Image (cartoon, rainbow, N blue to C red; front, side, top):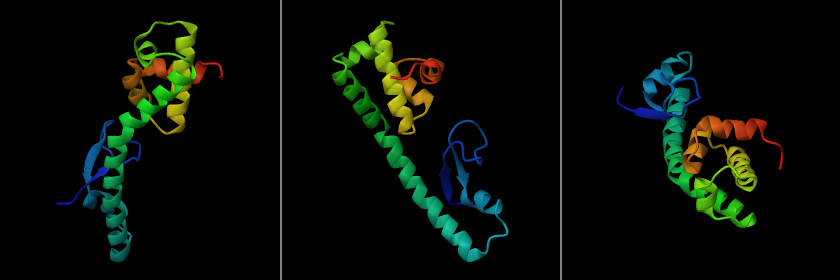
Length: 133
């Protein structure tokens, strides 16, 4: 058990709700009927996903920031106003648009909430109950 592989949350292999590191041997033991050459292919694929996931995490703030900046410029608002502002309709609609665009790109509610300085349940409400723009 010397080769740990990072497994993203939601794959069904994580022991908790948080992202975890699971040894490759644990993953391979789940598919014990797989032949050794196929196990090696799985091992290589999982090792490649670690680098992809790390790159994804590094670019998350950058991509979300670009979404916020684009929506702010399209709506003629300041980024700080959207993030720190109140509940004026124009600000809420801008946040809703940000949430919809971010979810299309696969970002989680907590990540979006972190950027917008809102609780993730507020982001969920904007996504689920907000009128289409």
